[in-house]
Amino acid sequence: MVKTVRVKVDPENPPREVIEEAARVIRSGGLVAFPTETVYGLGADALNPDAVMRVFRVKGRPPDNPLIVHVADPESIYLLASEVPRVADLLIERFWPGPLTLVLKRTEVVPPVTSAGLDTVAVRMPDHRVPLELIRSAGTPIAAPSANKSGSPSPTTADHVMMDLEGVVELVLDGGPTEIGVESTVLDVTVYPPEVLRPGGLSVEEIERVVGRVRVPGWARGLEKYTSRPRSPGMKYRHYAPKARLILVEGSPQAVYSKVQELVKELYGTGTKVGVLTTDGKRYENATTVDLGPSRDLRTVAKSLFCSIRALDESGVDVIIAESVEEKGIGLAIMNRLRKASGGEIVSV
Ligand code: TXA
Ligand code: MG
Image (cartoon, rainbow, N blue to C red):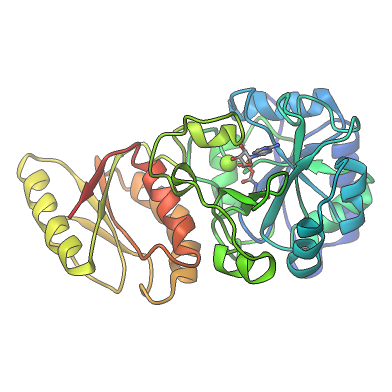
């Protein structure tokens, strides 16, 4: 056990002493959790294999699931990547800093543990002053998975981080709730057209406007089980999962509403405590209902998704029923997370 120090920081203007202390922890091989614009990350010196190993250990993360390396300026990509295709340059120019992670061929500088033995590396420049200043002050790129225990929903507040990692990390920088609420989009640019390995905060439509068509395989939408080449190892694990069983109901809004009503009634009748993740302020009798926001504003829905799943879990429900949202824009990421959280328990209507 280590003593976890939690420090509040102004995300717009993090105090220099706090950043410098956090940088010392990183340089000495320690772990620092920090906010980004997507979710909280659990950071370690990406070039220090022992520190990276500790990240895997404290998260309980399978060793074959590589980490994202965070940088504070676009040029750092040349330290980490041996080939930077033109599409990568275009995307970096347009979307960095921001919620876009690029998978590229890696250099020898990247320790094999960081990339889980793959010959590629995932790189991202976050749009948040805390990690940017931390990376600059530490003078090293920072490997950071989401700061949750492996398998549970990603943390969007420092409270979530403490719940999962208190006692195993040195420092938690509390910059308040994160802006986007789902993780970055992971895009493989070693292939052409580029392939989405995980939909996220940056929509496929926005990426396509810059580079033309990109591929979104079915498993990246969370539809079929991951079976093909070990390209995005993270996709094969059950993820974002609450303790409660989660049932996802997919279909047109009207059909979904009726089906959820029917399921709630049935489950309630057997003495099951039910929670529902809904949109547009709909109400369900005999269930704890959480409204994620307007279905026309999926950014708001994404922002409240993980904390609402955690909140329902805390409230002690046995089953969570989630309604589908439209699979466009950030809705693609929302549906991917819900499908994965359901572990395949999907009712199509
Ligand atoms: O928004 C985010 O991306 C957050 C914040 C903290 O930056 N980080 C995050 O990291 O979500 P993590 O470790 O929870 O998810 C990283 C994803 C996993 O699906 C992993 O398999 C994939 O990126 N990944 C990492 N390196 C890869 C590589 N070399 N090739 C393919 N996929 C990779
Ligand atoms: Mg994660």
